[in-house]
Image (cartoon, rainbow, N blue to C red):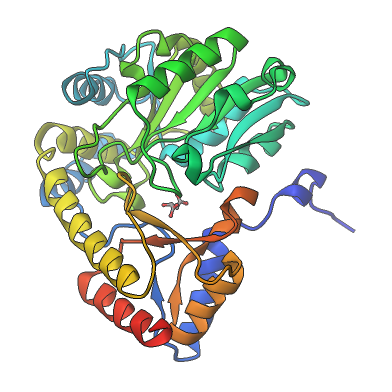
Length: 389
Ligand code: MLT
């Protein structure tokens, strides 16, 4: 009898696949489910980007393998470095420090295969993005959960990491603006993080796809703008949230050249790169569509206000975080994440992500995503008032 590989025993089903199955099943049974679960923008990709894809897709030159340049199209890497210099004051070399990815999620995976040995310890925030731990397990290493709590502003307490654990650790996965909590990091924290990583020779996998989704005066902050960061860190990023391009799968890793070269080695032995027409569309986006990010932020700010006002009218005392299009909301009445998420599903047909799916320290929270059309969010809030009011 054939059997799946033992390494898969540890890997749970991917959270959003599970939620999607639940939603599809309910919809098939006629239930009008409103999903506030996955963070997947509903606004269209700006038209010039779509038009550039259509134009370049017609050129047979682009129908061939996109492998002419191992790290992705040079023109795209150069444009990314200009974007990073202009918007985040970070100097990145397009040749040695930039790698085009099929979305930042695959970067998490390639990073582990590139930088982590079997048996290693890898630090990961808890709660943390559900893609991190499986990447660590696939590399044969063990995650070590670094707690993030409301008391610490959902920043890891670096001094609280036991020094024997830090000495053993080869890498650290984290992201700010943070998914799921929405917390942002400031320069001081990032400088401490870089120092910490340097003193223990820890490679940082700094996942930053929400860099521009910040509110209330928070600064879009790349770790690569911190002095010394490129000695130890790679930053993963993506077009998904900048330009409503989750489905396009276009991302990048930027930073430390040893990490970039190692990831490129893994990647060129794994896939054949991003369709050239998508890379051309990415260049167009960076050159011409930066202003659309401001419009997007207005949409999320409006939706955020709606949900926060509803929650507070229902008895919460909730202050929204400064980053991402997620709201990390404590459950009411001491309910567990799973109980509360189930209650919202049963009474209001609303799906939210249970905090416990993000780790032990996510217990007691649920995550609301603001990536639904306004009229559906209005309906969701009305259902919430009816269910809990
Ligand atoms: C999220 O909802 O956390 C992400 O957008 C989903 C993902 O990246 O898989």
